[in-house]
Length: 345
Image (cartoon, rainbow, N blue to C red; front, side):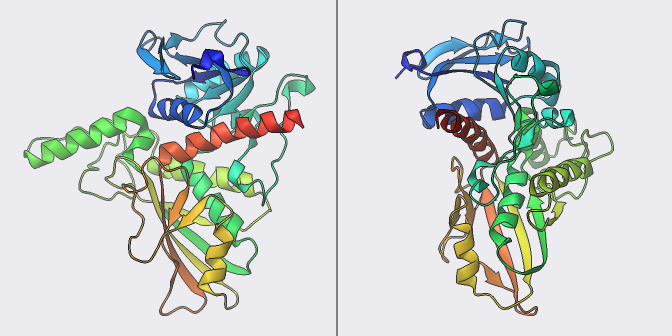
């Protein structure tokens, strides 16, 4: 059914030409979000691009002072720079801002919300601008933050000694430019030609990196610091904060992670795995371990059966994967769905 035939909320997607923006539009359609209209917005270089929404042709529009007129939900899915410059305009136009870039957290007004964890950690309220009646903004965090917080939430009912996560980000976290650089590097290395290093300032293809080259911005250490800060902000005394490390992997899509969990007392694998079931997590069978390729397009986190460590008592290894674009976009749309439900009650 075309968007214009629905009777409810007008939606704007800022950064519609980005990988995250495109995925967000797909999730809105796949979940049958009650939108009366969807407006695709982006910087001027992408404005005018022909695309579709709800099965009907449409154009990506340039951002201007009237972009948010009549908008109920404004999703910021592109660059942090665009979000910083435009989120207040969206809010002042009466839109509820749902930011996927992290830019709004600098204001100190946005609550971090992970909808799949609301049953464990009830959502904290946002703070309206200067105490006004304007709708408060929300921050929908990226997939690695959702992964780490989901792990912490599931384990919060157990007595823990320590939890550590090693995350393997895909190059699509750097949008289309990251995809193109890995593709170019792979092709050139196989042809014995010099490689491009514009995004990562390092060889990503056929390689694992604990840091990028000195000219890469942001640095991998900065990405790690941002993820850790978001995790600490969301958990904020509600659960043990996992130790986090990143290694850049030569993969296009899908976040993977390995986690080490040490418990203070003996706990069965079955009890541990059961704690994850209500939190949008699927535990795979023992035969086919989940991979970033196999879970493409999935909104849930997928994990392999938990593996007891052979040397350290009460210690388990957890392997998991998630579609980095789909999980982040799904959470953002769920935030809006939950707000609609809360307002109707």
